[in-house]
Image (cartoon, rainbow, N blue to C red; front, side, top):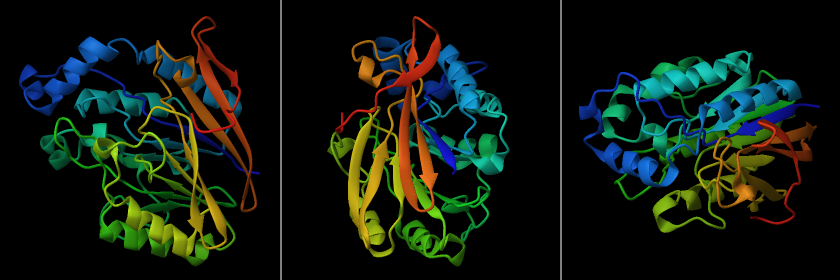
Length: 299
């Protein structure tokens, strides 16, 4: 029975060795937001506690659904690499996809800073195109993890994502691949394919095309981040509803809403069924992640 851990939106910050000129672009807006709104709310200590707690749960696979960095800076990605290495798992059992914060500026996108630092986690068993996405990982018996990238550079006030026709076409082929015939197909991306709390400025621009593709070929579970909330939704598939699960940020201390405090999810899989969902949330008093109730409805 595979066990999958789902973490997201780490937003790790590091300005070590950064030239101030690198901040004179969209990053200036993000830095201002950190300074006035979120400063100190994503402490590195929580990320380390997260890694230790995941290790204690002994998952078979870990998925990271984007926004691992804050400003797409090289030192941030180096820090993310160090934190993920702390999981002590082979890269074949860790799936990482980028979010909008990991493709924050055109310069970061051009230099492929995300993939340069985390490339060892971006190698799938089946990759139909020249890039890293889509990719399919099959290292765990009974599990097929399809990783999609919705990351794209957007205007300072936007946080939209796009998959694109090529990636959607190849994703459909992968979900129908003979290697997936008897496996639980888990789809991972950063932006949610619609649902509650998705505003125009945070949407997946081709969510409709993704929904149509999944309606045709199906999947057993779709997971995402981006909204910093626990959200349960579903999409129609060829054999019934496909569960869609959003996870809150795994490092955010969320001073005004304990329900959104740093957390991660554990999915228990048996055959092609999701048979269990557990949530673990950070307790500042204990300095550790502890079991938390799973909300009955979308939060």
